[in-house]
Length: 263
Image (cartoon, rainbow, N blue to C red; front, side, top):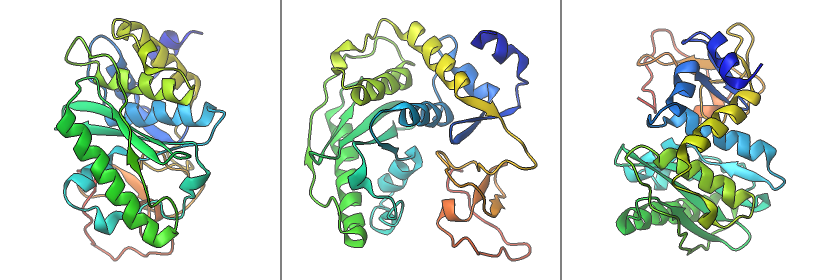
């Protein structure tokens, strides 16, 4: 059975787990035509790249960049402060700029350099994203003692030729970097092929979600095997206590209201 036939058999609202990310068929269908990719697809494919890479790759979720842009850098150094970034070859993060354009932040850990692959080549955007990452790493270093000195690196990639391929090209830029291939090989005229390729790899690395027993929560790139989940009032997401920065033993008070970080 090919990937398109498998996708036909999946109900629109059926939930899948792609490596460590949950998504629905509707998410995967954004890879068809000229649709704009959502964050579930961005995180899902980066999870596939991380799992299949010969080097250790850590993916930071896009919501972290949003919190940085809202001046929450100083109180978010705690995010992932128990992960040994120094043991990684690459740190990657999809960044949604102005709520309509995907870029890929690329941090080369051994050289402590960081830059952005941006198919619209916005200097101000690149500077802001990189500066926020460096501030985050500075705050994080006060807790972890690692990787406190970063320099900027310029990543050059061809300019996109339409208004919706930014996410696809950002993901292919990430794959090129991980495979040690020059970004010049990312062909902005091959977006239709890239869409089919990404969808096929995600389906090959997916499984059905079990509502009763599945341990993966709706936090992008969740890696918890178990743990108590919190249901959010604004949406239908379920997230582990630990995934949202609460102690694993945190007990939810009756009638308590939580503000979802994604909503």
